[in-house]
Length: 148
Image (tube, rainbow, N blue to C red; front, top):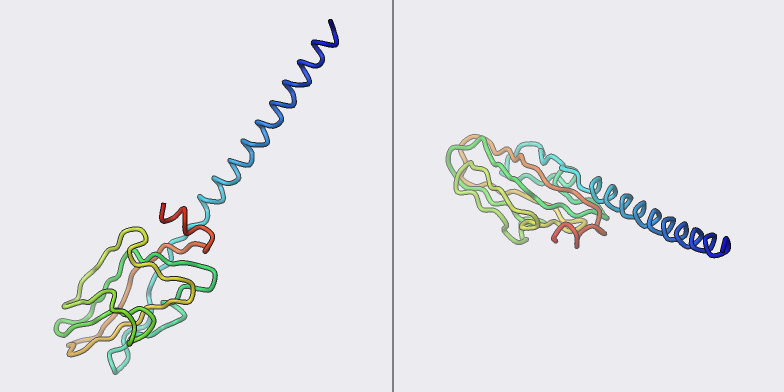
């Protein structure tokens, strides 16, 4: 009978070891997912004399990363309009501002793919144009989980 007890013990030990390894993998995955999203500020210089804000170093999603823009604020002007474009002045208009204001976006609503950038063009303004905002930044592999 001791052989039966030993084999039962060995089987339970193997089962517990397998469950422990699976729990460790799951904990590692959860920790990686919890650390993958960072919020980055969007704060380029004010518009130039032509009323354009084109600052790739602060308004471009880096290679290998997506940005989900969560908030855009245009301020400093009391008359005129401004439009935020995707990938240049000839790109898709993604946020038209009829006046200084703040737009908020839900998760994935204004998604910048790796290498995409925002550009602002203002016209007929009184004052200056300043853009501020925030975006969720995450590595490309995380997109399916971010979108959910």
